[in-house]
Length: 212
Image (cartoon, rainbow, N blue to C red):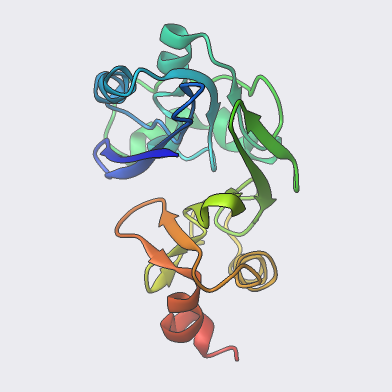
């Protein structure tokens, strides 16, 4: 599998490019900004985008999705529970001091819990993990020991819950019930910051250890 992680936008969101080396098909997760850089990496690996996945509808993760769709024609998928966040994209833009909000539209299709996401040569399972937002999802690729966690789980931390749609009780339940059940050697790519593993977070994450 081809896996490139780019830090995009003002908040340095981790955007993942997941590609199959044989079919040259790809999934782009969380193209929040810097679309030219994403397109350059796709071209470098000769990848064709088949799906655009959004882990949650905060502006730093979703702002560039429509622009990427316009170039590639790939559909955009995210959980529809985050549509209220899309409706307040002008307010979200204000959080970053932007005068003009990005164009963000409803998804071409929903990302439901335990849904299988598939391109030729690559597949993953969607885990609905509400807490950071109502519609937050993570993408697990078991064949590659990889979890794209969005802002649900970080190295040494968990997602903030003080923004609209946030709920700490739900977030911790999501992490314990949906993510810590994965193998310890699962590599976690969070929405921001450095990668980690499920085992590392199970043992040392202060938000999780104190509940044991």
